[in-house]
Length: 442
Image (cartoon, rainbow, N blue to C red; front, top):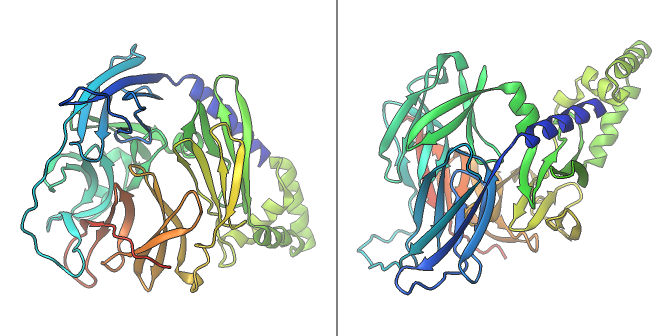
């Protein structure tokens, strides 16, 4: 395990020393009065980078270097705007000055339902939708007519209109799913390659990356804060992992939090003592050869981590504004750390222990636009979510998804998005969304 950690850290150092950044500085004003607008949400589209304007309407963001960026400006009562920019390779800064106009809306005639119906965003009898991601105010879709061995990427607008399509290269092998990385890129995971998806004026540009490189250099990284990267040494075959921060400026690594399932660790270590004498000897020899713990080798030899008795750890970390929040489901506490990685406090949580324990699915989702966190549950195939306060750890309300077995659930700007095909129907997999309306659970 130690060798693995050292290799990962060396990889981080080499990757991040080569990485350039772009500083975006700007000011937002009212289009009518020309006065500065405070508290405007500024979001670099297709990324996790965002901020709010200060009292004088100014903002400042540093992001990894890109050739093309889109920035969303959003404030309640004003019409949202998206600005696109092409950047040259030597450019390290960008200044944006923008005006927002107040929005005026009239009430149209509408039909009242007992409960809002899900919106069908994209659906076709010619192909199924297997995965999706968000790009600006549009959607990137992974589609196929029959199997993902012949997959197509499609870009759709909010009205479901397909803007452009792109056939996934054959050399990539069978397509699997999308992976959204910490830099905000949508990546297409295929059998042979992982393709980083770049959009250039609504056109797909795919860059092939080695699967091993993505797994080693990118996937362990959770996010960035205050000039530091946040990453973990998580390994699904071991019931303990750590969160770290890494400062590129001084190459200092700091441990932020340790997650451990103590009961599982006890069972994990016991596997060594249940081996026959010859097997114990083999485990010790392999441990010496690979410079790791004999208990790890023994558990892998016995197949314990593939059995019904083992469950990989799940304790997500989210950065909400300038606070690091770790939802530790094994200590049953939410830990808050400041932007420098110093512990602020910890508060108890119990949403992960519902009355029917089978309903908790060890899954949480973050709405990156609204900075809200939800826990996901499943009752007899029907998913429901609870919004969890990142301040108190309490659930703030519940919402039941209307369709049975909704797949690839994601939450974005107050809506639940998913893929669904009616049970025992001939319909292909369609892309839906529902406006989240919380019900009080207290």
